[in-house]
Image (cartoon, rainbow, N blue to C red; front, side, top):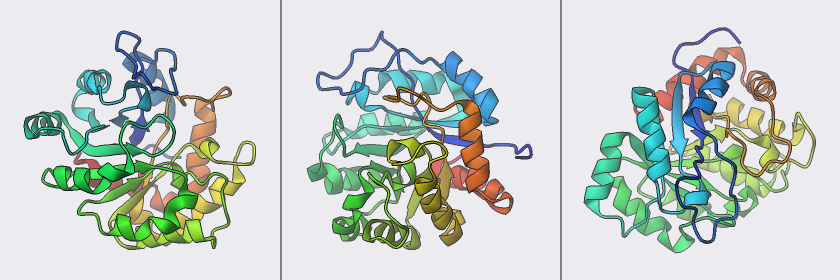
Length: 266
């Protein structure tokens, strides 16, 4: 990939044992600091970053907010809030660069489905989106509900179909419908989270390429560093290989730079 200015990694996490883990946390990864990430960032050729609250810390966003401050103006954030989060807290997070509310609908997530609409209404005032991670095979029964939200939507990890289905399956069709609405973005990231195949995860790659063909203007790229829960995490070279294989050269400026600048306000 040729050098691009302003490439954004839209999904990564920081872990720091000085912060308490949530009582029901499923993942408790070893420390992964901003300094550690800087090495990864150099290898990936990215300059901007979106720090995402991991399930490990539940509602306690302090670790990620501190990391955002370390990264400075090159960082934005997606944090965990719900409809009970007070306006002053939301205003403070917004001023710090938070641009989305995270919903992780798999074991360890802090916010349930009953909070989807109330939280969307709460954060819509700030122009935030909802970031959703789930088993994409559940999307057919959720698509109408998601289309009715007052916020934009960002879907993690190529839909995280577990296991991946064909591009004409009901799950992938539902994701394509969300993207076609013009209010949904998809992160091209972490194929190992759902793939039934070894590297290079051709089953997920097929879905990613289809989505890129459908709507390159609705795609985002991310590393998912430091790959929590993976016994055999991908190398930086693996991530670059997926990125450059999936995304045609004519779409790289848009997907790696332009789209994240629009979604996160760089």
